[in-house]
Length: 336
Image (cartoon, rainbow, N blue to C red):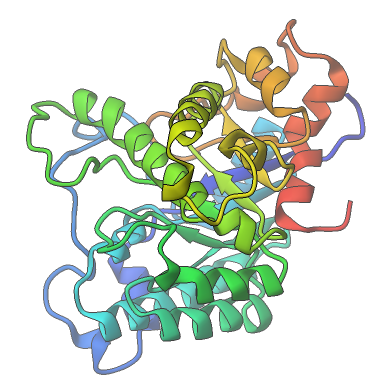
């Protein structure tokens, strides 16, 4: 295991409004109240969980302690941009966020940011994909689909995917704990977090497959993050079974859903201690599973993420190397 590069495929930043607001152009910078919709739950249990990390030196120190060489940085609160009804403001917010995260990453080559684009404003989203990748040097485009008026497989969003594919960067599905939309039955954070993120991820996966996105954009790399990999074998079988009897309702598909999901272009982030990981790798292949620290969030395992994977007895060293770094290189399109 010596000499290997460890790449955290999904870390996070604390994207405070005080950081983002100065990067948003006028007049949108003057928006009163919260910049994006907030969350009614306190995931920190009133400060008992998680870390309030904002500065790059502290992050780099913690990466050294964890044993991480490179960390890909995702938003936290800014994923709520998908819930904004005002298209032009959503576009301005995404530009402001991308300006800010690009500035953070300029502080160290070990930090790689991903961009946000306004899916509710497709022409602006396409333009921002181009700017975020070619001008700001970001490493992919992330989306949390909760709040959008159409599912991610909709033809409406195809121009966005076309540009992402052209630029050879990944589409990164990273859902919030919100879903399913309109459900009011959750009475604890525990309940909502248990259900929300996986349900939204299953919806997005089915939408992309049944919508024909992997057929229309065969070189587009897609990743499903922060939901483990245990769901994937089940969802492949479930979708194949449904598709078998109703193929005319997914007319663009030329193969079974599971074949697209195991094509080598779709990636999945595992949990370090996930018991079903060996079985999932057997079904998916060993080249499409990456790891995510989730640092500095409340449900991360800092500083034991990397060591937990390294010490597993049910994975070979070659598979560990791929999970801890090699597969992330393929996902993000970096040279190995």
